[in-house]
Length: 186
Length: 299
Image (spheres, one colour):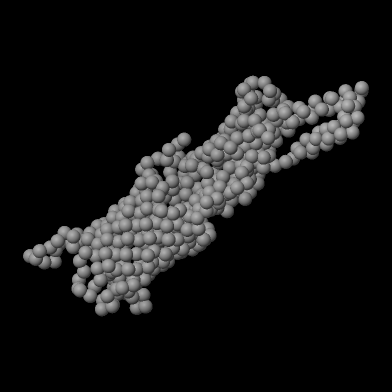
């Protein structure tokens, strides 16, 4: 009888492992960046097809974005972004792989807003660098919305700004990420 | 019942539980990403919508107005007195507009023969990779030129249509790699009025153009037309231009040497008399400045 009980408990755990929703994802996350230096020319772009997966059990999260998917207001800027700065033919993807370091403080089963601490590595233009930021996660009716804002330095990623445009393009890029994650159906 | 549990279900459950323990470090993106490569258009085969003279594989981006000034100086071999040709210059001012992703229109005015020209350029096939890939791009161009000079002999019956010439082109090409693009340009030119009966009204030519990218912001370009049925009595040459595209922020400079002084299709196909072999070449440069007239929709 003892054994049966043990087995039943184990079965319950297994079942929980199978049915509990612990992975969330989106393929239409939004990444917006700006590196405007002067008010004359706005340099900013949006990508609305960011892929993001979050494992709520471990707090692991990953982002991937196609550099060519960044849309600028001005077509020539977009061309220069792809051709001269990020070289999207050579380095088509940007990726972030990291972890929510305070994952235990987030109750994914209860609606509410939770502060996040995220740590990980960002790969872009063939360079991988550690990034750390804070953000918020909102649980609402089984869906998670996350957002985070952070800065990176273009020079860290081997992206140089020619002197003729150095008064327009800032070396510091302000990036904001917005994702609405849905349960990943297996 | 007990037996079944102990002997079959228990080990299975254990394995399942263990698996979830070990499956921590999987690549999460693998779970959702499509393995099939998406269709992706190949763009930026050339820096500018003209290789040097000829229409290139590039279109003007939608909503962009490209203001282009083309200069050709005099012949280099005229020596120091003419400052190697720089004392004389002819030019063409042009405006090109991207109506949509695949449709560009343009007008221009040349000082030489006070000629107006205009064209429609439509991309029929767009090079792409991934699923539904396409190895090349195909663009159709139809244009017209109009000579605005005063009539040579105002006393005779002059027809307005005599001022006109038309040209039709197909631009077929491929961006082979980041560094190398190549195109061929079959061309037909029709002139309503020709000088003598031995000059054909319909002229056929094949153009070739290439770009070799030297750095991120500089490329080496060659542009050539072979005219198939030129009247041999005129001792005309085939136009050949070589040069560099240099990009500086919003401008593209095209700096080149060429034996063609005309800057529209009619002029450089039918009036190129300078000979590269004799050093009858000219320095020329094009400047292009793009203005975004219609902002891209921010979604």
